[in-house]
Image (cartoon, rainbow, N blue to C red; front, side, top):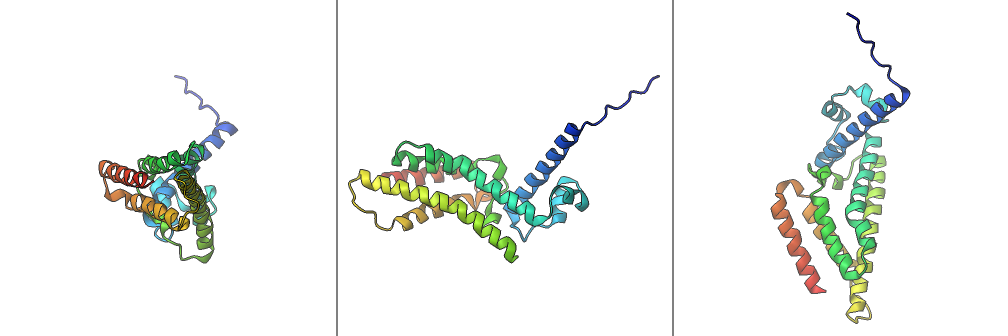
Length: 208
């Protein structure tokens, strides 16, 4: 009986396996940071979650800070995908506002954040990591804040208002409503969450 010779692993195959492992580590870290925050997660915890040794994990990432940075970028991409880009594509201010709430709803139901994202609102104690955290979260918030203010200003113009009082306060209010829906994500079932977002959407749209 002839024993089959295993096929050699090609360079492309090795790169593919390395990318798959790297993606698996990042996805596990994303979920863990989302639940427990930067300070509540260790490299050991991440390694155990994906069945790797610490040494193997360090082959793919320089450390926890590098992983956290990529996870923050991933969170920003999710906000861009579900909220920012659709709002930018909306044709009218009213459609923009409607799209904002629909985007929050779509983000809340995205499986990638099923374990929660409240951990990303917990500031790390490490000063260097905190600086990265503030920069990236601040950039994400600034993009959304600017869009909301443009939207609210446009709605005011449509109503014949020459100026908009407390534009900043109004945009911050909408962002706070969004956080109130997304941060306690794991405590509400999808039906209750959808009903809350729908009620908020209807109430705000009626006001404009």
